Length: 581
Image (tube, rainbow, N blue to C red; front, side, top):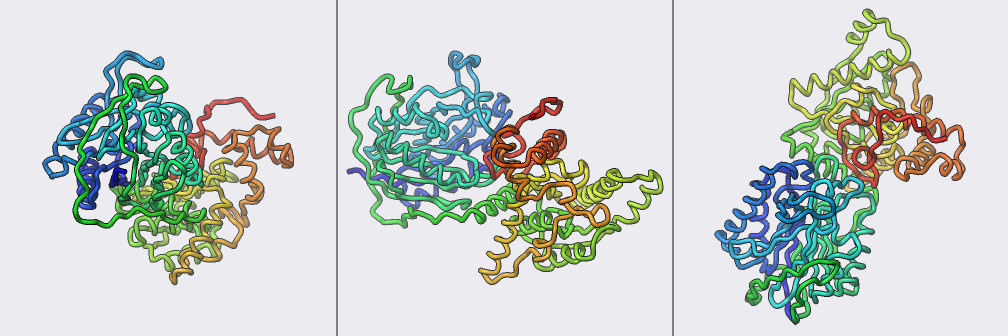
């Protein structure tokens, strides 16, 4: 039985950085070849980054991707890696008649096999996702071939992400083609508990394809998406042969004993896909025995997984947008405290600047809690009272009620943006999903910022993550970053005397349960009430949620951790008279 040494490069790429992404391919290919790999693979759209969105509609970008691919093939051969096939994702262009109601020609989400200085084979994703954050039917033409490469006497069928997630297409075609290995390259965004779904999917598809199946996933972050890796290799019976760590960049190298290739079918193999078969090198195994790293890494616990996703998402956004430091307003409350802790873990406390901006309504304990957080984490801290600015506005405008409360928040927002402009920090917005759902935030005030790290985290989970982070610090012998008082005290915006969140919002435990049904589950009022919630309370929560859409539309991007985050997942009209009854 032939043995194939497979290298799966679970790495990050940056949208638009064609040269930098190509350099990563060269570097990681070098590492894989040094490990004796016979086949090297990189994630979906590795050369362009993912998702490229409307860049796909720009012909200059498509052509730059194609040119970079050809140059990369030549470079790999020059570096001495030409005999090793390399699978890499990129943006291509189709030249063929219209399909699926789309015009003739157009961009494609594609991958290529580079070998001996040339593009030995290229193919495009067959199934195009068009749900949630995905708009691929808007951008791409579907592929219509079943690509198979013969490497060391093994037929390897190739697929791209959604080709594995959807029924039909390349999975049954791989069986029909008699493949010994099905290799899928992916850029699958993270969602809570998705690793369990992913494992079961790959096991199911391996059985349907009748062969060992490798699922290579991207890591890193792009705008509001974060990628957790968790690459998998399972045999045809569903046994896990290797599993990469979550949220860690690296190369999984493993030896696979696979069935020898048989006769090559011709024509259409399944679901209208035409077979595209190329025979590549069949060099023997190297005489030396390099370290083979294929293993099953342990999964992260739920809270650690979410927290790590927040850290990775923020780190990627800061670094890829050219910032070195972040700025966060510290109120002493739980939200800004968690955001500060995430920021310290993402970019280092020396690059986190915290500002306490007390007003006449700020409690002493809130000021103390903010200062204690700074001491515990080591972030850079300063205090800038807003009292004089507030008094100046009040003398001119004589505001009362909500206008007076919002003025304080907007003064703080203006102060943060001024410091950002002056010192070059990226401002972080501390709002959580519960507040955003109900509109419990001030436009141009606490919603100010370029990124919202906990935008997709419900308030109850904010408390859970804060407790987990402190427990993790204690368990490792470090100082818990978040003051206990910030976790235990009742939440308050402190914009008027004695104010508490409970004055305006239901108890967060109840509120979040309703919001998860309405926002995440798209359930109507009758369905929610039928679950035992008070009808008037449901009316109130749904009314607040419906009328706050204009605020959410103006909120900055933030790391998506749920199946339905505010943004591309949930798109509602701003002008909308429909109300649940």
